[in-house]
Image 1: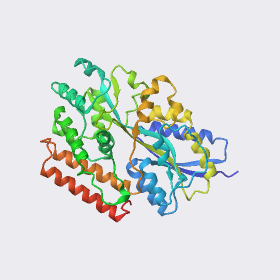
Image 2: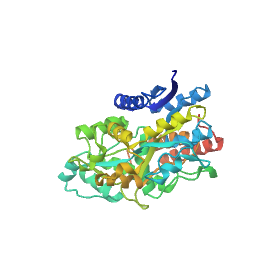
Image 3: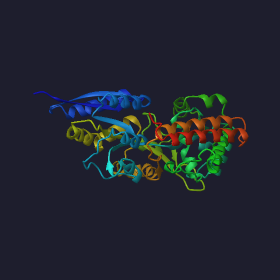
Image 4: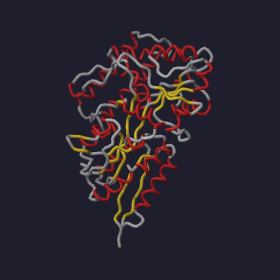
Length: 394
């Protein structure tokens, strides 16, 4: 009997050999007695957008593919996503996770796992300084970093222009009362917004009290992460991705590390979260088989193993039933994500590039000067030019 072949494209992570082997084994064991085979591709995040667009242009896309939460609206506008007429799971942990997956009243993607920005501290270093606090305000976090900075590097981060710069620091902007404007209403002022500028100044002050050598501002984000987790390099670190030797659900019980909420500002405090979703190609003629595969991909059994291997979070409540998972659940429920906009892929690039350039300008002196305001105005002009063009996404 001939077998039906489906194509599945997923993201390859830095722990790719562990995740890929598990994913392939899991699904192929499921289909062992079925008349189905899978053609796999594992693609890095940085290449996935281009590979998917090329595949659809050549009319040869995968049947099932993974996409980021901020890509859904764009791919839906391009008619790449099939409406999903199947009721998978309803135990979504936060409303935004489901809202992002619905475009023009149709569900077009299924939540798979979440990234979550975390402020993590080193218990041993904090204890040395007699710092016993569960929640920080902007002021107390700055003063804590200043105290530690007299003898140790308090907060490790760089200004390298990558998406992680935005993911890791957007929570400070939200907490300070800034939020994304409605891009559909025309001209926007983001970089020149006073609350945005004030938050940039605060981040710059964190850098200066941390007294890090300038070379760290150029350092790859993942090298700084390694220095924090493996080499005792810093007292605090902000990340949205944990190395696979860290157990997410036991992190806050760890003798060495402690999870903090992000510092409270004028508007409260928030975590940034984004996610990975599974979608079915609008060109696929094998939707029923795709539904069966996705059903297994989002099962608690599969997700529990995947999360252990990749340091991700489940978007489904059942994973968090144990008391020790309560803190992570609370952080996710207090999370926010980026606006759903078909131009987001380009908007995001401008945001982290502009953020990087301004922080570089503040590297020597944490003051808002004429040069900083010129750079801010330049990036607002670029954003508005993009919005006027309407489609600068490919």
